[in-house]
Length: 218
Image (tube, rainbow, N blue to C red; front, side, top):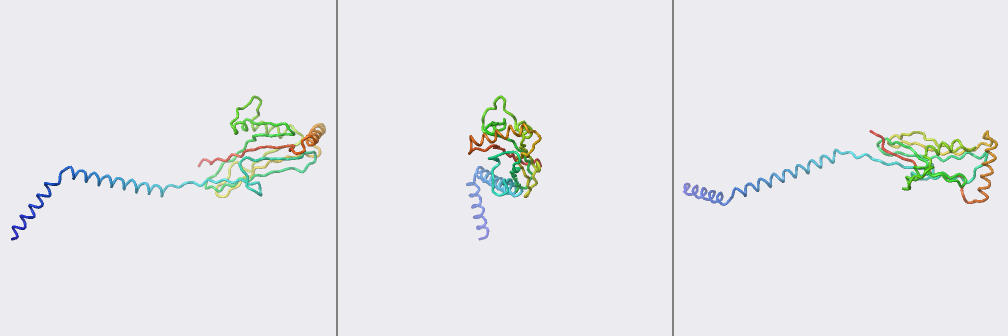
C-alpha cells in the first residue's frame, strides 16, 4: 500500500514538472528581480528625501510702520534752506536660515521737474540704455555734491544675519539754513519756490530706489 502511494506521488511530481516550462521559471525570476529593484529605488528615494534639508528664504521690508516692496519711493513735497532733515529708513528683515547680501541702486530721481533715469533704472523696466544716462553710483555722487541740499544714502550693513537679522537702508535729505554757498542757496531756493507755484501738486524731490537681496555664499 505504501509503495503504491509513493508511486502516485512520483507520477504527480513528474506530471507537474512536464507542464512547467523553463520559460515560465525565467519570467518568474525576472518579475521577482524587477519588483526587488523597484522596492530598492522606492526605499532609496524615501531615505534621500528624509536627509535633504531645504533652506528657508524669506526677506521682508518695512519703513518702520508698514510693509513695503523692494522698490522704495521717496517723495519730498517742499525743500528750502533750514528745512527739517528728511529721513526715510527701510528695514530689511531676514527670517531665513542663511545670511543675505544687501545692496541698492537708484533707478530714478526728479529734482524740481528735472528727471534723471539711471542705466539700472532703464534695465529694470527693460528699456535700452541711452547716451548720457548716469549709473546709480554717478547719480548718487551728483545728488550728494552738486546741490546746496544734500541727498544721502546709507546702509547699516551689506550683510544681514540669518534668523531675524536686520539691516537698515536710509535716505536723508538735508538743507542747512546756511549751506556755505549763498549764491547756490538763493538760486535753488528760488527754483524750489517757482516750481511749487507752477506745480503745486508735484514733489520738489522724488526718488525711486531698488534694494537687492541675494543669498550669501555658504
